[in-house]
Length: 98
Image (cartoon, rainbow, N blue to C red; front, side, top):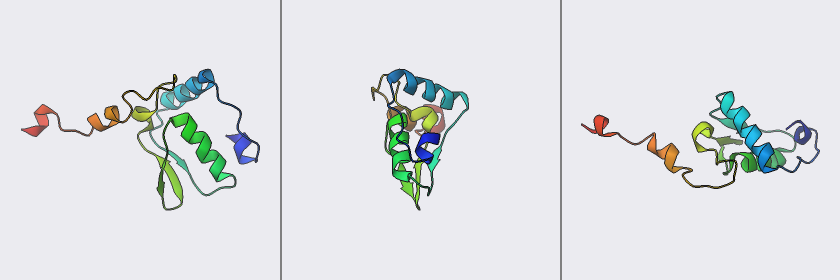
């Protein structure tokens, strides 16, 4: 990310590097990632999109990835279960429907 901020291209992300970065985000309990107005914003958004495995939601000049703790694609790049898992947490359970 520092490389991007200084205008250098981000390094190519291998599956192992992606897995390590995703593990760091999960370990820190990161739930939301924001990219605000900055130099090289497009490059940072592209990097974050590749890392998180899905595009952001643009909100007032800021790009947001919500629920990253649940919706990050697995390090193998598959998308099986992405979105469904996050949506399940918002659905009513049998106990709450009564």
